[in-house]
Image (tube, rainbow, N blue to C red):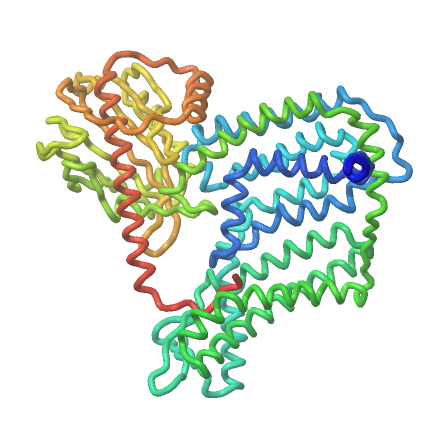
Amino acid sequence: MTDVSLSYARTRSGDLMAGAARLRTPAATVYLRGALTISVVAYAYHYSLETLFRSLTSQTPLAYLGLVPVFSVFLAIPLIVPEATEPPIHDRQIDFIVGVPLLLAALAWNLVMPVRLSTMFWLWRLDIVTLPVFTAGVVALVFGTRTLWRLKIPLMFLVLAWPLPYTSFLVTWLNAFTNSTLSALNFVLHVVHHVARPIPSLGPGIYHVEHGQSGFQASVASACSGVNGFVGYALVGLAFLAIVSGTWLRKIVWLGCGLAASWASNVLRIFVVLYVGHLAGENFAIDVLHPVIGLVMFNAVVIAMLLAMRMFGLHTNLDRGRFALVGREAKRAVPKLRAAVVVLIVISVAAAALNSSLRSYDLVESTLGEPKLTAFTDTQTAPTGWTVAHTDTYMWAKPFFGETSTWLRFQFNWNGSAGTLGSATPVIADVINTSDLSSFSTYGIEACYRFHGFKLYSIQTVDLGHGVAGNALTYYNAQSKSDWTTVYWHWPVLTQLGKTRYERVTLMMINSGSVEIRNAGAAPGVARSLGLGVQNAISGVGTAAKLTRTRDFLIAFARSLIGQQGQASAVHGTRGLRSTTVAAGSAS
C-alpha cells in the first residue's frame, strides 16, 4: 500500500513539474503576457468595450464596431514576431519612460474631459480615442518598446472602433446607400412577380408583401438598409489586408469585390425576407428569419472572400512555431514583470473607476453616443411641484446662432405643494436650440455677462447628474441692481424628425433666501468629484460663498429638471417605437 502511495506521489509530482516546465516555455510566455495585456485593457475599459459589444445585436449602421478590438488581437498574432534583422537591444528604462506617460495621459483624459465636455464627451465617444493609447502603454510595460513598435498597426486599428468618423460620414452617405439598395430591390421584385410591391404614396422603402388575402406592410429604413454589413465587411477586409502578402492593387481589388458582394448579399437578404413573408407570413419572416439571416449571410460573404484570396494572388504567412522566437525575445526585453504589474494594477484600477462613471450618460445618450433626449423646445418638463410656461420668443438672435435656431424663454413657478424643492421666487429658463454647436462657444454666457457690465462673483463647474456638467455663475446685475445666480449647460437633443440638434439651457434666479431644498440629489461619485476639482483648478476661477444657498437650490433644480426630461424622453421614444411599421432590413 505504501509502494502504491509513493508511486502516485512520484507521478503527481512529475505531472506538476511537467506542467510548470510547460508554463516556462517561450511560447507560453507569449500566451501568458498576452492574456495579461488583454485582461488589463479589458478591465480598465470594461464599460466602453461592453457598449461596443452590445451594439453587435442592435439594428444600427455601426453594429459591427464591436468586432474591432477582436480583430486587433488577431492582427497582433502575426505582427508580434520580430524581424530577423532586428537587433536584440533592449532598455527597460525606456519601456517605463514610454509606457507610463501613455497610461497617465489616457487616465488624465478620461478624468478631465468628461467634465469639461459634459454630454459632448459621450456624444463623440471620446473614451474610445484613448483605448489605443492605454493599450500601447500596457504593451510597452509587458512586452517592451520594440514589441510596441511592431504592433503599431493593430494598435492604430483600434481607432476604427471610434464611432464619430462613421456617423459624420454616414450622415451624407446613408441616403445614397439606401437609395441604391431600394433601386436594386425594386428591380428584383419587378422580375420576380407577386412577392411584394412598393407603395410610393407612403414614401420610399415601404412595401406591401402579398400573403393570403390581405398581406402585410414592411419597411426598409435607412438605418437597416444593410449599411452595417457593409461597414462590418470593410473592417474585416482592412484587418486581413494588414497581414496578407500581395500587391496593393490586388488587395484593393479584393476589398472592392468583397464590398460589392456585401452590398449584393444585403439586397438578396431583404428579398429573401420578403419572399419568405410571401410564402409563410409575417410572423415567420420578421420574427424568426429576419433576426438571423443577416448575420448568416454576412459570415458567408466573409468566408467566401477569405477562401477566394488565392484567386486574387493574396496569401498569409501564419507560423505558430515562431511564437517560441517571440517568447525568447520577450524574456530578454522584459525579464521580470513585478514592477510593471504593480504599476498596471494601480493605474488600471483608477482607469476602471473612471470608465464605470461613464454609465451615468445612459439616461441622455445611447451606447454609441446617439442623443436620447427630446428637445426641450418641443417637450417641456418641470421638477415635481412646479409648472412651466412659455413666456417669450427672441428672433433677434438668429444671426448669432443660425437661421434655423430658436430662443425661447420659459418660467417655472412653484405651486406650493410638498416636494423636494420650493421657492416663492420663479426660475427663468432661456433655451437656445441650434444646429451649430460652435455658436455656444462663440457667444458664451460669461462673455455676454461681462459685455453687459455684470459683476461676476464666481464661476464654478458643477455636476448636474446623468453625465451632464454645467457652470454655475453668481453675479451682480447693474441694470436691475440685484444679485443673480445662473446655472447653464449644453446637451444634444433629438428633434421630432429624428435629427440631432443642440440646446443651451440657462436657468436664472434672483437671489432669495426663501428657497427650500429637501433633497439636493445624489452627490457625484469619487471619480466625477475629482474631475470637477481638477477642472475648477485648471480654470483658475475662484468660488465665492456669496449667494451659496441660491446656487445650491438652482443646481438641485437643474438636476431634477434633467431627470424629468430624460424620463419624459424615454416614454416618448417608447411610444414612437410602438407606432412604427416592422422594419424589413437589418444586417444583424
